[in-house]
Length: 199
Length: 279
Image 1 (cartoon, rainbow over the protein chains, first blue to last red):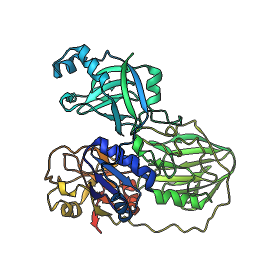
Image 2 (image 1 turned 180 degrees about the horizontal axis):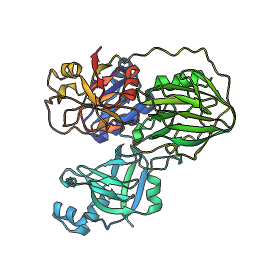
Image 3 (image 1 turned 90 degrees about the vertical axis):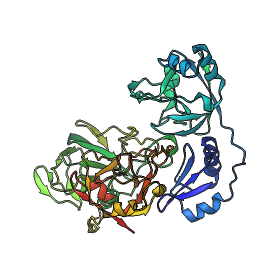
Image 4 (image 1 turned 120 degrees about the vertical axis):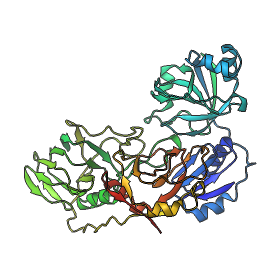
């Protein structure tokens, strides 16, 4: 782990990958007094801290600490997205095989960004990475299940988007992805395990 | 105990000190962009530091007080009138029940703050009454016809002296990705007179000037961002992240602005010059 100062009251910890970042963030959230702990693709940001103190505390962490097993959320998905054939082509397989592969992965929410409740779901094998669209769609419907780069994601609200669309969730489930009035505003908060099932 | 909004100008929002602890869910902090001005306004009318105020962009707000209230206007000096009669900024002014207070356009700076005794008590979202203009978490922007509830008022404190402020430039700390830039990039950042772009908003102050040369041109994986981060997209023109900044970003951060100096970003008009200062 490499630590970089991020101004006078924040530290950025660089780690190997998103799963490690999520594990470090989960470990730290119980121990460290920080205003914000933000895991991301290969880093964890600790904001609102005293950098010296934090650096001492982080010295006590080892990447071999067991990954905290988050809650498992199953998302019933209708696989009728406009980019299914494109993904099949990229993966050199049939559309049925795309669905079989996508439902076979247990994803982990690595971090949220882009929009509130939009989770970057890690777990796609390296060979299944897909490019983003050259020109993003101006409007992707809420609840769309998509792949972009090494990530899978579900759009909590309608927005522009450049990821490849595999399918969609039911409206009632999509509405729970981001609900600021709920006890759990983001259904797929970092650390949550996610499986997609054909529904 | 309410205010009835009659007009709002280009953008009026409810702001307090912002929400904390939800960056990991992708939620910006929001909060008053010129935090010291908002804090002064609250003190003048006797409110606590967490009371919500109105952030008025380039004037144009008017409202009717349905009960008698104290108000204080701080930040950009906008001509204040109560029932047509001129009143001062930076001090508590009484608005009797049924009277109309209006804010003209400030001749300099951008954002004025209107604190009302008791505070604006719209329903909080995730612990804050601030409107975030990136993801639109929090109350909707204030619109004509809105009826804004007020909290319980205390006595104003008219003797609070407004601090004399001077826009003396933005003091910077080296950023986490300073090594992604040419070795002299930080010096260039400081040496350049940057021009404020019209696209600047509550999310970021966008600056025009000679491009900051990058050493590394590969893609940076998205990482957490802080208030005051100076992000440099491929154009080489820096953006200073303000209260509504996205919680993660994929462009390298060359520097971080001292929080106490960020009010200058809230008040800089398009075309004006911004300078960075080494600490």
